[in-house]
Length: 201
Image 1 (cartoon, one colour):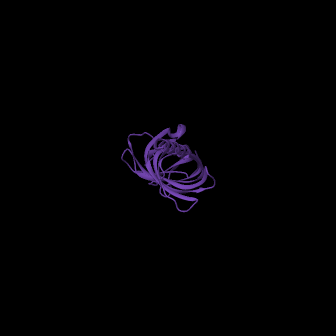
Image 2 (cartoon, one colour):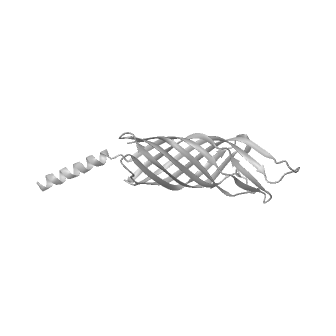
Image 3 (tube, helix red, strand yellow):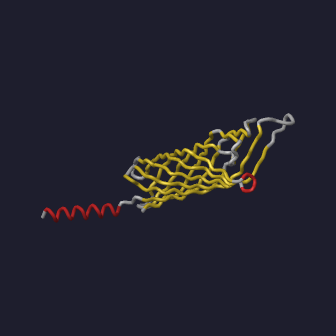
């Protein structure tokens, strides 16, 4: 009888584990907000560098290691325009602006923590590291920059396997030099507002 009870316990545990949903993927619309930073060309006068805020899309995968802790990866993409504004005026009263089209990519690996705040709402926050990649096409080429990632948000359950998600990802990074080794960058942040749907399995 002892062995039968042990076997039933093992089988029931395996069945529960098989039903537990540990994977999820979210597909979101992304509103990209960028702060200004400065670059120093050849150690000279600072130049203000910005990227136009825009709307794009993204996705995030999470693998839950425990009920409250997940490891995941995110990817976001949006079109944008680069903009440089010199901080000196020559002739007086006139500033030089330079615009060019870009495609903006953000990637990262994040650790997510969640906690329940009711039957349907689950807030979360996450942190990690990744990169900001910008394609300035023939105007400036590619830029590859490291980023620290933090973020927060909440899921609202709409079904056993589905939820709505709203959140924000914040990437602290240096951008604007496009591989020019004579250029020095300052830190700035990129804020991405996300709204999308989650599927779990």
